[in-house]
Image 1 (cartoon, rainbow, N blue to C red):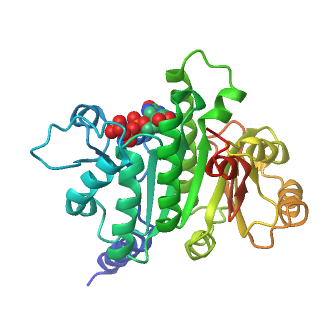
Image 2: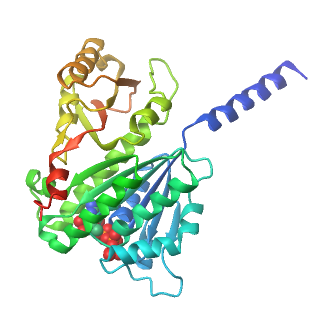
Length: 340
Ligand code: GTP
């Protein structure tokens, strides 16, 4: 074999190995809210398989994604779960084989998105994660969920309460986002506008989770090892993900801390991952040190992993912060029934 041919073979072998070793992430959006966020992610072009599932055929048909799964008995009318989590759960059970077949065989992480409060997402996501856990016990299951607005009424809040408690049993990590906090912070003209802002917020969280777990190569790049992410998020309970932009690293980090839609308590959490991205000149080592010291000393988080990615695609510094094993005052009061 000629020298060049051997080189090409070697190159192909390494490329195949690299592809095989890449972390495989699937994102599943269930119900109306989940489907809308999947469309947002699709338009952003995030590098993960995007799967939409719904009992409502017309919403599903309009969803932009890679794979669609219509849930429920094929002879039913496919017009949604009428706000009933029992119907949503039953529909997922009826279609569980199609739902699980949509997931890649060699998947490492499944991110499930749902707006709690209705029928399809609230009833369907816990069943889907439970069955996924039984068939693929090593897959990391992360739920990114929203809590309904106070204005949506007691029944939806009660649905969300029950659905959340079921999710806790079957997920490794849950990232909560309260619509109530969003409307307190951002002046919105309508509920639809609040939902669109929340869509973008949840999409940003998923994008950060995918970027964290998609290693890149290049000068100056420091990746976070997937085994560390796995260890940190496995059976972690509630987690926080915040993203901040600014001219300096420390300010961007402070903005990431404020990007909180659950009144999160990060102190003494299980662990954290922080990722710094920006132009090489802006990734100042002293500021990076200041941030990691803040996490370990001020927040009392012992296990901290760090990633650095120099890029000319960003005009400002982007800091993404993931904290695993937190508590949330919003979730506590919501589950305690004070949020109704
Ligand atoms: P059914 O309609 O009963 O089949 O259930 P579903 O799971 O499809 O409900 P849906 O996702 O439409 O609504 C559940 C909750 O999600 C609502 O109570 C809202 O709080 C929220 N929600 C609904 N639509 C959207 C949306 O487009 N974006 C966002 N961010 N939240 C939404």
